[in-house]
Length: 484
Ligand code: ADP
Ligand code: MG
Image (cartoon, rainbow, N blue to C red; front, side, top):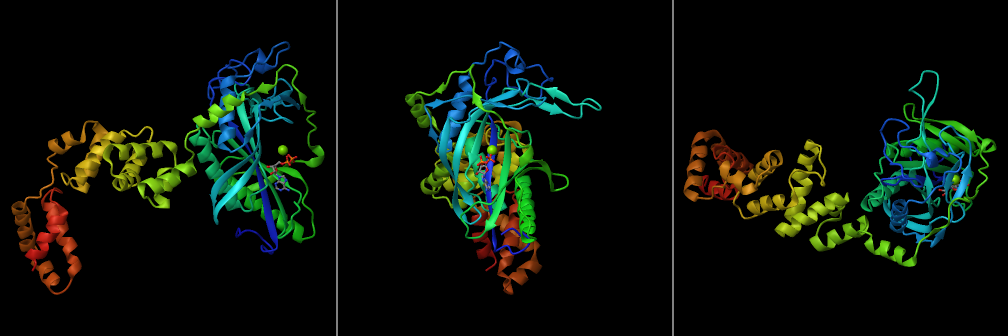
């Protein structure tokens, strides 16, 4: 249990359910032809439809429907052949129509499940529903002194809202689930999933109950969090508040809370009494969203291998540890990269070590990821083969990797140009060994006196003398002979 859970932490159990808003990666908005682009001059991607001008009629963007369908299938949901668009009515300056078009009673998908690695092992969260809706615009408070500006470029861009059952129990659980959910959504390539930029937004519903009880306690809803660590912290703070309150004899009031990231604190936004009556009703301007069964089947078949399945296959097919398979399948691009290297060189274990070691480090240093990394898989495969065949040392392999990342070119050309071919000729190696032994009489005496681990020192000296080109295995054999 969380360390900040005050009071008797064994007595209370927390219950957490999430509402996740996902911005779909479409070119255009959900009901009009405006570009769904962010960061442009305010109010440059607007039209009569998303401005809500009288008489303007929406039409549904099939690209958004396709992405929502893929999302629903990745979440293991039942996809419905007929969904209905509804109007959710409320007043807010960034909502020009005075209502949001969403799906209410008949969403596109229900009853899914997402498996994830919880802090205590395998776990899963049921997905209650996933529905499509349009986003609102943005209120900007720091542009006009003493006033609020409104940018409607975002108004009408497509979202999927994913609603979980209240299946999570701890802050760590919540974070682990979100990490897996994000990975899943990235694999199916439906969204940027960037919490800082708002393309993934998470609201957390939190309640507590006496451990062992089946009934749910009354919940609060936390909004305005912009990182997974923020969610974990906010949920932790809220559980602690509820436990302290109830243990003092108080009652948890239903309310919406806003997270303040700078102060690590929650404040009340609105209570149940102030909560909206949205007066949902079917949108008369839009026909039902109809999906043909064969379109659903085709989308299901076109789904890429999902991260957990891919990880399991990596363990099986490449004899990797669960940990290594997990690291390599962290992103779809990284898993693709690894598999292409293996295909080209046939050496899974070596490929895993190179990708997780030097390649990872170099990518990080260059600010690249597996999809943009300067050294493409076939080139890395050549380096791995040069090392595997003994043509160059492991160390030289890293040098070559750095060189081709920097300047391009083929590994073998770098090896030739820099004279990196490994020296395995005994007469040359013996000469270096002799020089090193003669130059270090003190170490030789200590070695002979029983300090066997000094062999590493001698190997290092020979490697240095050879400019990194000596074959270290052979050097160590020759050293043992020379040192008697
Ligand atoms: P509301 O009607 O207040 O929106 P819903 O029943 O629609 O509540 O649920 C919204 C979200 O809150 C869902 O993710 C659900 O799992 C979660 N939730 C519902 N009841 C609780 C509860 N008592 N404790 C924690 N989470 C809850
Ligand atoms: Mg709700």
